[in-house]
Amino acid sequence: MQKINSAILSSVIILIGIIILLLCVLVLPRVAQETVLIHPEVAYLRYPILFGMYATALPFFYAIYETVKMILVIECKSIFSIRIVKGLNHIKYCAFVIIVLYVLGIFVLGNANALPPVIAVMGFGILIVTIMVAAGAAFIKNILIKNQMKLSN
Image (cartoon, rainbow, N blue to C red; front, side, top):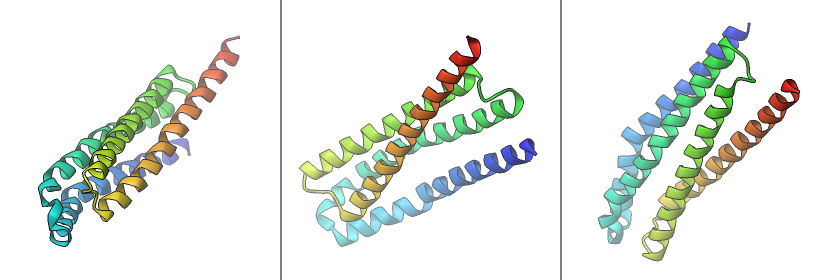
């Protein structure tokens, strides 16, 4: 039963990664093009904004990879493995990188009065979700460390 659950969870995580990849490849360029058509005064920022969004996709995909690796470790070993704590650390750091990149991007675009509303809404939505992921990873890591200490005593 546990192998079926972990296979389903891994499949869902990989499916989410594929959906985000398709959004990056198919939707983001169209949103950038539509933003340029609606707000021609920010046309010069089309490629820097796209570059920034693609730059934040890299840590996201690494976090997806770490998550799938953690599922495989849990399936083979135990949830109290040191590899799980390391994976949660990697996920937390990926979330922090994404947060920093989005905050810098929003700050720079906001100061230049060139923050298109579509990009602002997407950016704040991604920021909120990323903050929740970072907090969740840190919380779970702390629980696992406390339980590992209890088990070792």
